[in-house]
Image 1 (cartoon, rainbow, N blue to C red):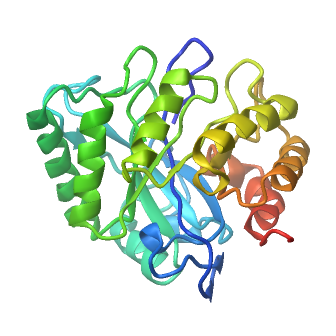
Image 2: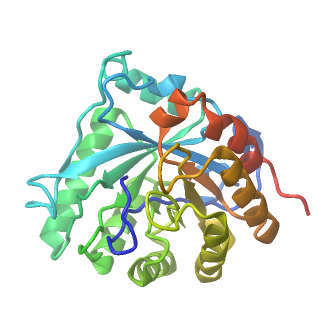
Length: 309
């Protein structure tokens, strides 16, 4: 997704659903009327297309209930010339590209995961100044939907740095996609500190065009401080409600990233304060695999367990 620091702008990713229903592979599932039929608890990870030897989709650690395909890019570069986006398959060093469609279908239909297409990211902001550009965007998403054999949602990762979101058009686009594909999930990963991002997520949610926001706490000054994360998530919960908030973490031996112990500490306190938090996401899956899946296997069970009442 690539982050933006305090002066940089936004990336977006998000999802939500009402709690309740039956028990599935990833824990209690959402009730039949919930957006996208999402699990009651979300454990998500980003799957960038730039790695030469990524894991195949079916081989991602089974704790992950949501996988973000990162990322579709704007035609012509940011902020997009036509409104359309394009997709580049991941590297095929372990067969991820040559088995992509079959693995995507297996992940959705057999493993029960939700596969969400992230759009933008890594500096690829997009503008939607008119309806023609918005329609071209929808047409390109529909084309990718057909090519993939179906996806479960869209992650708005398109407003970054100085690219402010065209909220009215993004609401229209999101509602159109939800109309076209019943249960389609709309998410967004905002910059935690950004008042612009907060208004965007609030307005999208109020319009019924967003399922969850997932502020990202990594790759920027102070973002990997558990105390900051807890205090900032309090603000997002007050704004959107806990069930519409997913918390973004990054585990890495690098500046402005946390250790798995720090993430565990932050999550325990967050769940104590906000038992109904929707879940957590990880940047990113290849790093988690290389480290032995600490996010999936150490943090995942903590996130996926039902809250104590």
